[in-house]
Image 1 (tube, rainbow, N blue to C red):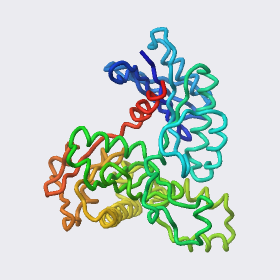
Image 2 (image 1 turned 45 degrees about the horizontal axis):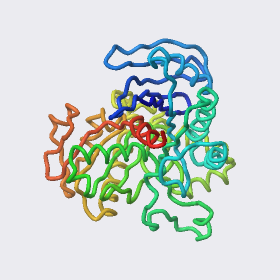
Image 3 (image 1 turned 90 degrees about the vertical axis):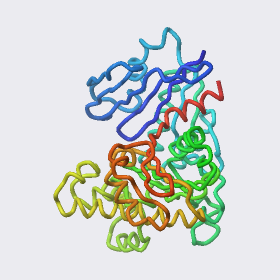
Image 4 (image 1 turned 60 degrees about the vertical axis):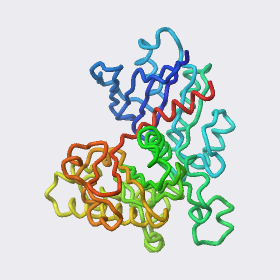
Length: 382
């Protein structure tokens, strides 16, 4: 019987889960380490037991892996993990599924760090730390971009000189583990819908829409980098490239632009208050409400565009922290889209029910379980 540990790294946090693989894949525990680099806090839940939370001091990401191992050791039953599964945000144009990670592949994946600076460096640092901590375990990468490989070429291209496409400047798409889990959930719960034309809205601090047909990604709002498409917590989404040219001519260099685009834009930049949707929804400030209005307007616009790209719509799914929990965002995002067959039942929506539609097109609210997707992909190599 195998043990699989999954690690999902961000710039200041590390999510983890432990699965035992027998006839089925059983999650034994899960949790995360927050506040890395300052005052880290470990939050863990074992089975149905109450959550455990404790301060663990100032930790770097590499030290967090050791802290996770220390926390889960009492629950291993004397057995070491056979496989360590990692979420890797960017796999480039060639990786279309999970891969065993070795030094050569990790070196190749480093070239994508400029395209996902909030994620890729931390993903790879976690892999290296896990290799040192678990030298006998098989390290496996599950890639966000892999779900989108096989897009029709027309949805991968930008209207710039063609040689740039051959050099790798193309749409890659992200949030693939989340989208894959949603489709696999629909294949179990609503198989007739899973084979149709589905739009999945992954809404959180990072956000994107994916148009899926017959279980395969057709198009995504997030493309070359993790900056495009929808407005996000600190990232702008859609932006006229002329804005960047103007700012460069005004004296902003690449480093300043990168900091603005990744850390100071989106809800945070528009509101001047916060990147947290909960705080903005509760705020009476005009800037907060304008930021929320813009966020929702982009979702509405992209749902319409994605329906046109798919040539129809059989279901809409909300997932991610905002998508699952912010009923008012869902309500306002769907309002006005009745021409697509979309309308909400207020009571079901307020209750965060599994299905919340009142019209002809099903609307689902589903949790994203990236850790299970990572574990399942890792199990294939054990």
